[in-house]
Image 1 (cartoon, rainbow, N blue to C red):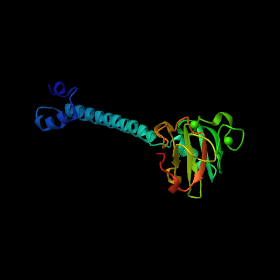
Image 2: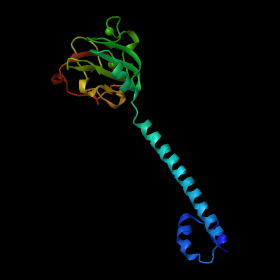
Image 3: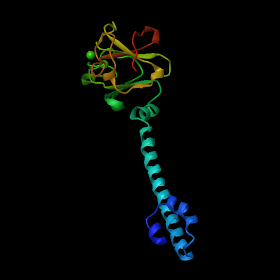
Length: 187
Ligand SMILES: [Ca+2]
Ligand SMILES: [Ca+2]
């Protein structure tokens, strides 16, 4: 009778029913007493695993992006441009200006023009990097600036030149300027 009541019963049932067992012998009480303890351990073990399972993905989500890690390994004083999003595959780096990313001079040459998808700022002067859609030392046309404090722009498709043209795969020149010369900043 007692064993039937407690077989498969939960922990709450066990503790609730314990005082209501005047007719039960010691053996029955002992048997039902062991069962819930073992179940309780199993429950806590399961909860423990579930907690770890939840924490691990959370930690992964907060892990550094590739731009974060590239930033810390970048050479001081340089701007970097990358072919792909999140600072993957560097097209080049520059501590100075390059008025034409498509010519055969300077830090960026040939196929580098209209190719960058992300950029990184590791300058130390406090100046911003001003990127242009066009080329030439007149530094005219649409531009967008990357502040030193912004560190990097991991997706240039989310940014636009002052002309309204998307920055992604459209940068063709750059120079270092003070932030006051910029009308638009990358985010
Ligand atoms: Ca060039
Ligand atoms: Ca362009």
